[in-house]
Image (cartoon, rainbow, N blue to C red):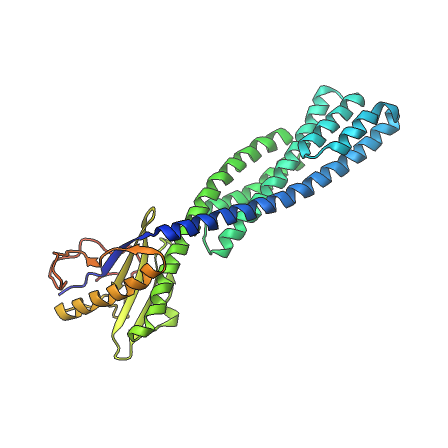
Length: 317
């Protein structure tokens, strides 16, 4: 007799790894494209502000002294180059070193905040699309207005320092988010392949049974017309490794105790469903269970050594 779920260790197949890499590159290209669009807008704004500054200085210093500066501004193709032109204007206009440095820090902080806002928008869009909650991303989003307030309070040096810290944090968040996207996509694809295969095996999905837990496990319940229940839970184990559990759930949060014949039937069913998982691009291992003694029929009386870290709805009792 057994209450232990039958399960398989699953890894990502080579074909799917290649597809994941392509998807990752596509996300990076899209994020960079969005950042470029916002950077272009920032450049246009900095050029506009520089032209205003040039006009102000021309009124005081005369046109002849500014001809080279005007040409440099026309040729400036980045925010940094525009900033260099404005520094030259500050020198011509007789600003003190401290005043010129302060003005340059303000321009640099404005540019950095624009870049950070663009990066945040891209990461938030990806997290929202895949329904992945990331506390660090939420904290980073909350940090941006705080840095903006520092600049508005005329503390550009502090804003630059905090902005640099946020940029480094976003690098880490982007790596974490990409890994989370790939792993939740893998679990959802595995579960979807099983759901697609169940009707041909005589099962109907209970549409309101889908659960996605904070620990990353996802699952559904299904039932044959005879009333025979089945719960499928896909868990995250470690990098590039997952676990697919097949349980006879009794619908009240506990697993059904199975005799040898029912255990064998569940194992055979799980093996058929694993074939669907393999066709999706995953390497599903041989079906096993806690306390497996290597026999074909998995009926036993040993206590399960491991419980799936999923909803208590499917947990062994």
